[in-house]
Length: 144
Ligand SMILES: Nc1nc2c(c(=O)[nH]1)N=C([C@H](O)[C@H](O)COP(=O)(O)OP(=O)(O)OP(=O)(O)O)CN2
Ligand SMILES: [Zn+2]
Image (tube, rainbow, N blue to C red; front, side, top):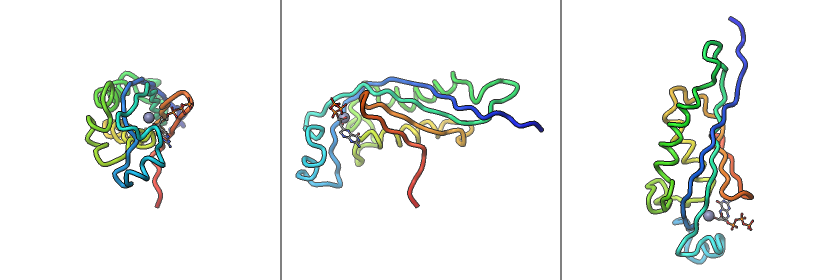
């Protein structure tokens, strides 16, 4: 059997949402000190850009790592239907007890997309631009 080339497939989505950085594991003083203006009670909004990258063999017959139209559907469900035009802290149960940093949003997106993939092993990276300057990547890695 001949070797197959490995490809990286990325699909991008945009969503808008508001949030407030406030950790239930910290007291009010600590929250204020650590998050500063982002701890403001009224919250603030972002136009997030999310890139999901899959890594896998390029099937000889289909010529694809995965049909990008399918990835689009998975991302719409995991990202757009869940967070677009929402208050992340109040409308997304995942963030009820977990602070809505972009790091945590990236983990949430990872879990949501991966759970829908016919082959979850393809999941490679979630990259989120919270602003054009603030960028987070998550590759499904955890400490021991
Ligand atoms: N590690 C993290 N740090 C911060 C996060 C985060 O998600 N992870 N988030 C925030 C705030 O929510 C907010 O995004 C920061 O906004 P702001 O400072 O206004 O954004 P910019 O850095 O792009 O603004 P500049 O105009 O470039 O100063 C804070 N920290
Ligand atoms: Zn923010």
